[in-house]
Length: 407
Image (tube, rainbow, N blue to C red):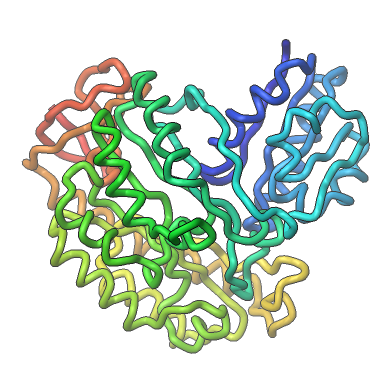
């Protein structure tokens, strides 16, 4: 068997690439591109890499799947380098990999449930990603992901527990719950369990989980059990990455977000009272259509008002077929300049946080390459390499502006 998988984008894609390895195990001399569609740049990078790999491996079969393939199958099918295009549901189905049609992309909106797939390890990662949810029922005006992932559907609690047991049994100390909109977890299941319920059951039923971490969440959907777990479950890590997107109420409305600026600030303050050692990261879009300088400054100010230390900055990228693509666009130079200012603000906030960590004792999960991660997901450069997958107590001795240094 000779199949390589090139994975773009989110942790969910990383988890699904492990399923693809098993489903496509019989295929020889192929390269699979598991694509991302969150920005036009992500699509451009996928196309660029497809062309590069075909030049380097002219005899290899090129198979394209993932969100970009689901949303724009015709574009990839038209590339002379591409042999097959598979949709997001098809990529997880061994029967689709055994079939021969060149384009197999079904109606993702017809997907009504989530199937459990046994995953024994996550190649190249010290933390294990467990998919608990897929799809999204919301329709933010900038986002194409629902058209690549479909509507929200959840994995039953028992299946999540079984997957976590399998991975911890294979030596993983940290489990990361992942999906497209994990705070919508459970609405489609019997009894409608919430994400907080799932977290509590996992920590109760899988004592082998040393650290449980959440991927990106939508703060407006956070339930009481989740907040209670953050306050009282030390194995639930004090790090939340928030889907905030903007700091101005009018822009949030035009994005069709469901929270206000005040909601975001109140949530961060409430969680910090419950868990004083928590840190927050966030996604913020720079240069959304109609954004004025004053509106943008409210996003800059939100970094301080929410105490954000890890920013994912996205220069606005119009995605064909979304309402935001039809709104009055800003000049690309303005978008680029605002994104740079946001990044600089994020770097300054991170620097202040790193300064405050010097002298602290931290539990660090060791990774490959002589680095590790604290409970707050801060990168740590180790004084000497340790085997990956260990949790060790270390003292922070300094930092290099981007990561901590530890003895």
